[in-house]
Amino acid sequence: MSGPRTGSPNPDLVVEHIVPLPHFTGTEPCHNRPDPFFHDTYRQDQPEVRAALWECRHCPLAPVCLVWALANPILAREGIWGATTPRQRKALRTKVIARVGAANVDDTYRAAYATAVTKLHPQGQ
Ligand code: SF4
Image (tube, rainbow, N blue to C red; front, side, top):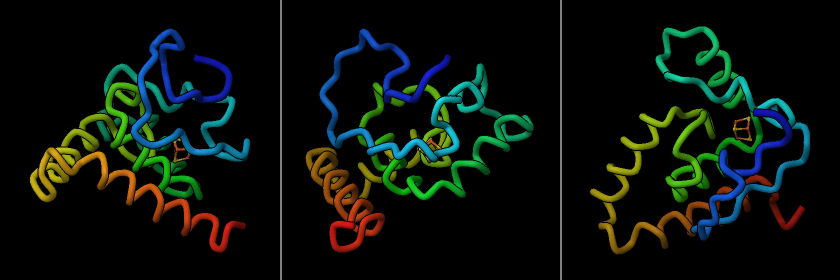
């Protein structure tokens, strides 16, 4: 995979975003080099997986990116996003549903996304 991350490994996939794809500044570790963030398997004993997770953990966009990936499971089915593997996101989604109920999941993600964006850009900066 080459070029900037678009939020969809398949550009032909048209899916409504529950929350919008984060606004990439071009300085994110995955920008223009998405390949290290996509693997056949996501075992954490794989050095390349650990390296990608480490880069995400140090990315300022990680909290927003994680909420986007949780809220958009079809778009973020593959890949490391927001310092999580697909399996970790599946487990987190299950926990969120258990906590807030399936009917409230989308609103929960929208609220979490707004909070994460506000922390990223305090006072609209
Ligand atoms: S958190 Fe990871 S996947 Fe998300 S923008 Fe940053 S480097 Fe890319």
